[in-house]
Length: 155
Length: 422
Image (cartoon, rainbow over all chains, first blue to last red; front, side, top):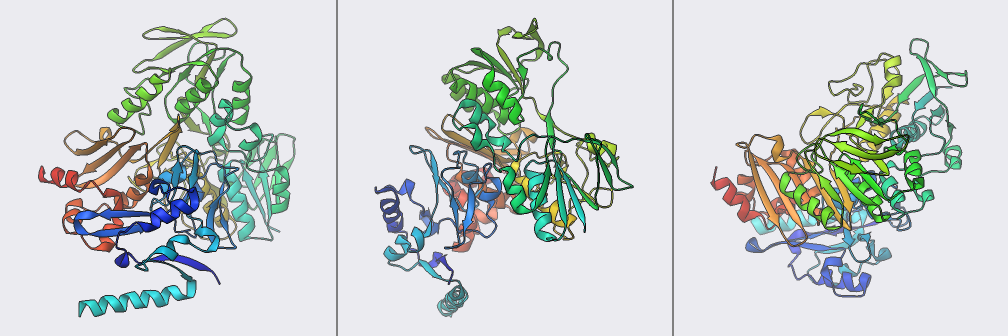
């Protein structure tokens, strides 16, 4: 069963633990600038938005890639970069509407969420449950739940 | 069996052939190209010239790939004549190809200005792999790059990396004149100059000097000695075939196509650098010769030629250039495209990064970034929607609204100040 990352912005508390565990897991260092997930914060309003590669069905990053290095890995239904082919032009970084691709200046390579090969670390550490890795079939159910919760809050 | 012919094997032609094959698995798909090799990426030629990547990495396909995908490719072959009424292409080996559907993806050629001395040995351009091979082989130490568009900049940097002394000559008042406003262009220019690339703005090249071989360039200001002169002033659509078939051209000089990439002739589609398209962001018609546009146009043209009814949504002209480890990107209008009274600007400058937002009537119409370019893609949606930012910024405090305007984080105060002035 294909699973996808689902983010519920309402639940994010902005603790940024995901950024730390992601960079530790992927880069071996606590360095949020090299994390695959980013929390965009609007501090005044107390709004926190986790942003990461959405593994789009028709990814713009793959359209702009001049060396066809970006393709879909069907086994995990994710968008991956072939590092052997990538020339580091950063067209994908500039075009992604969600800031889902980062660039490591020292290593001179792009990076993005690879779903930790099917076991996302950030999900395990997200206390608030704002990031979930769930079956595609469950996504709709989860949306209904969210809507129901919002309605309940409004009443 | 239906024959779908594709003329041109660049990314547009390649995608068109694949899309046609996928849409109509029974058709015979024939691709004709004057290139002696399979698909390669013109975008990374400068990386090959500089030595960052080996020659084989420029190629995106092997001849076997075409066989595997069921596409017949005729390499090193030119179309010498076209009889649209009879649906026949005449090839340079005197063969004829009858087609049912034709896709024109002939691309573009560099514009070579009629300067005295352009025919001299050592005057080159950078568009094809052959150009890059020539540039790799030339012996010498000093080069003059004429034109400071993305290709000009990347070529200058590539030769500099190989140890050449490089001068860049630009006719207009800044480098990358179609991508950046003056403050950001000046920052980029400083970065080039600090590495030792000389930049001469507002200079017109009058003559290329030398006997048989080039020895220098004379501008209206000075004489610059050079072993190699690279003319990268701009690209023009290759319309040789289009003219033979009397295809209607648009105002910008590219082949006119409808939203299905169909030309004025029945059974003829066109895609890539040779067509005119509409800018998604500004709505203007023009020639938008970018890799992603060519790719999507190719997919649409190919599928439609094989019977589909796909639509081309318009060109997304987000240009990204990278050199000396830095990336910069631009989308939409420049403030210099607008009158000084219309244009509002937000300029943020940090140590290594710079961000420039162009607004008109409190709506974002363009964005430019040096250094971190992640925000630029996010702004495209905001530009497309054309919403009034006063409302968005002041009222838009729900989470979903904030999510939509995430690239504006940290800019709220600037935006409020700007709209108060209105």
